[in-house]
Figure 1 (cartoon, one colour):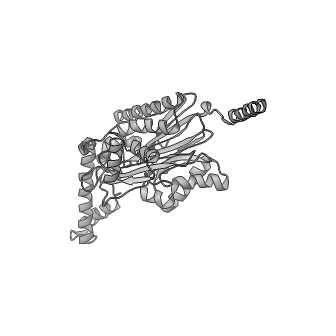
Figure 2 (cartoon, rainbow, N blue to C red):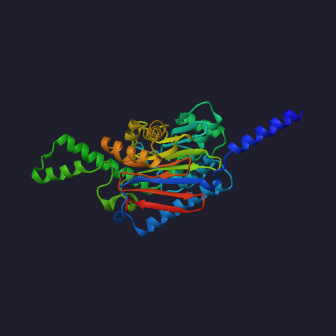
Figure 3 (cartoon, helix red, strand yellow):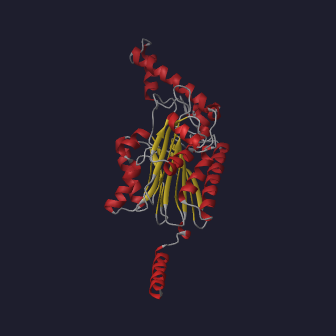
Length: 366
C-alpha cells in the first residue's frame, strides 16, 4: 500500500511538473478584414467606430482567458462581438449575394486535438462561429452546409433568426452598385473596346475595364467610405493551458454567385490551429488563399523547416501570395505568445492583447 501511495505521489508530481501554466503568455489577436483601407478613405467617425468595436472584441476575449477559459471560448466571445456589429462583413454586417441573400461561413479549430468545425452558406444562424463550434464538439463531421447546417444549429439550441436580420442598407446598396458595374462591363465586352462611341467612348470603357471588380466606381463611392475591403473577421488565441485556437467568420463577397464558398470555412486555407506550431486566421481574396492553403502553409514552414512564426507568416503572405496575385493578410499566434499580423494590401483591421493587458489596435499600413 505504501509502495502504491509513493508511486501515486510521484506520478502526480510528474503530471504537475509537466502541466505548465501559460497564464503569463495568454494572447488574443483579432482581424476585421483587409483591403484598400487608407486614411484618405476613412472618416474620423468611422475610424472611431471601428476602433471601439475592435477594442470591445479584444476585451470580451481577454476576459474569458483571464478567468481561465479556453482558447476556443475566447475566440468565440471575440468573434461574437464582430458578428453582431454591422461594421464587419460577418453576421449582422454580411454582404449580399447576387440573389440578394446573405450567406454566411465560419470555421473553428483547436490546436490541442486538431479538431475542427465549419459551416458554409447558412442564412438563419445569428452567430455562425457558434455553429462551427457545435459541429466540432457535437457532431462526427467537420463541415456542414446550407439547410442541413441550419437544422443542426436549431437542434443544438443556437439562436436562429429570420434572414431579414442580416439586412443593412449600406450592404444592399453595395450589391446594387456591383450589379450596375457588372452590367456596364458586359455591355463593354459586347460592343468591343470602342463601343461604337468613337475615341471618347473607347477611353471611358478602357477605364471601366481597369476598375477592380468591387462594385464601386470611385474612392468616394466605396462602402462606408472605408475603401475596397475583403471583409472577414477572425481571432486566434493562446490560453493558460498552452492550447491554441483559431476562428474565422465571413459573409463572403458582394455579388457572389452560385453558392460560392471562400477560404474562411476551409480548414488549412483560411483557418488552422496546431499546438505544435501556431493558430492562423486569414482575410483576403479567398480563391487565392484556398489555392495556396495559406493557413496550413504557415504552420508547415514552422513544423518542417523550423522557421519562426513571423518569418513563416511573412514568407507566405508577402512572398508566395504576392507572386500568385493574392491580396489580403493573416493573424497568427504561436505557443509562446509570439504574434504575426502581415498583410500585402493597403490596410487590415487588426489588434492584439497580451497577458499583462497590453494591447494595440491597428488599421493602416503606416
